[in-house]
Length: 143
Ligand code: AMP
Image 1 (cartoon, rainbow, N blue to C red):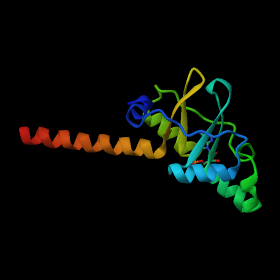
Image 2 (cartoon, rainbow, N blue to C red; image 1 turned 90 degrees about the horizontal axis):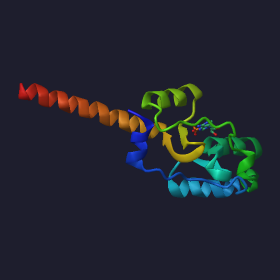
Image 3 (cartoon, helix red, strand yellow; image 1 turned 30 degrees about the horizontal axis):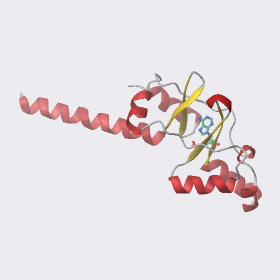
Image 4 (cartoon, rainbow, N blue to C red; image 1 turned 90 degrees about the vertical axis):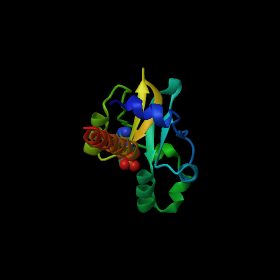
């Protein structure tokens, strides 16, 4: 099972933000869309950064609420780890677990084409296990 399977079920839309937008705007967008991270994209759809709610919480703890007027570029992570669509779900889970983050933008040919979160991966895992259990029950009853 690959990351492509998740994108085919949840869609390929990614919430993005301009690095020059303020952290205050990012907070509103995260809250409105009920998500935990925004991706910044540069020329030609390349990923140039990711801003998670954790980055904002850390900045507020360090600098106080006035940081909400600062640009996204000042708080985002620039060294972004990405997945390709043919990466296995297990590999994606491993990358997120080992690096202690919950979001993995997906790129093809260097362009952003989707994003998977640890929540998406766990959901698919649970569905798979439930389906296997159901198949096993049907097999036993048919016997
Ligand atoms: P998260 O657990 O995804 O909310 O993010 C925790 C920290 O990891 C934050 O500093 C994020 O900016 C950073 N982060 C999230 N996703 C990635 C990623 N795919 N590559 C690199 N850093 C990331």
